[in-house]
Amino acid sequence: MTSFYTSLNGLKNAETDLRVISHNIANAETAGFKKSNAQFADIVTSGSSSDPRLSVGIGATVSAINQDFSLGAIEQTGRALDLSIDGDGFFTTRNTETNEFFFTRNGNMQIDAAGNLQDASGQRLQAFPVDATGTVTSTTPGDALVPTTNGAGSDLSSVTIESNGLILASYADGSSDPVGRIALATFPSPDGLRSIGQTKWRATGISGAPQYDSPAIGNRGQILSGTLERSNVDLAEEMVALITAQRNFQANARAIDTSTTISQTVINLQR
Image (cartoon, rainbow, N blue to C red; front, side):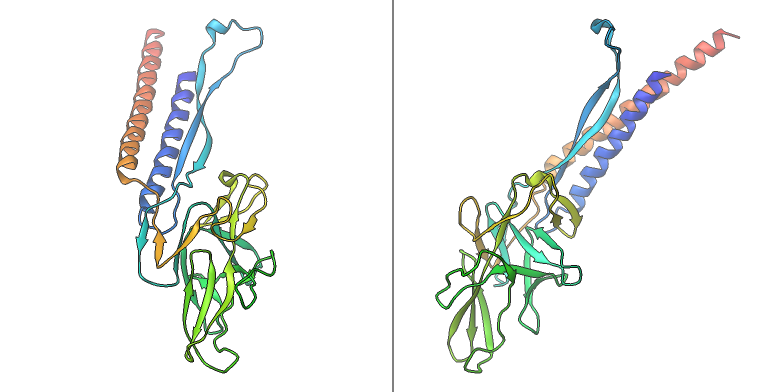
């Protein structure tokens, strides 16, 4: 009977692998998406006094579903508020209702009527405050705000973002003012981030606390304005993995069929 449960574990693991692969394929065109990989470990049960040469495994279990944070392809969009990070780091956004902070590689930003830079779901981009020369004045980031009029009363005409994260607001009178510098977050263990959907992650005890700095500082990448980072899913690789997972599922199902046949034979012999 052990063979039934061993093969059943195999079926469950193959199904988990299929779900992970399917999720990757479904998000092949999602900007900022990072693929996942299912990892498995074998299960062996035996007493401490058992002969190690007679130990028999009893199947496998899912040991982890790891996220792959490798860089995806950079796509030109020509839109100034589409941002990508050419290297390590995450954009930080704040949920205005819960005051929670989330982290993302999807730099599809927009500006609301009040001048707040935010993502598609209305969460506000975090940036360092700067002085008139563009020098960071505080290491604590806050909501990125672009004044809709300058001191002379001229209306905002455009917003540009430099490779070092400096946000420049241009006005109808021809003036241009620095209004902030994008803060990029890095983590001691990014594999420990918890995915919450919408290409966002939340910090956990495993990932460690976010460490903020300006783009192009340390191992943080520079900002590429007018571009978006595509998903890092390789469809050819995922299709091969899909076929492998399907074969694994079929093999475990066949093992259950074989165990059933043997059990039925034994029952018939006892009659």
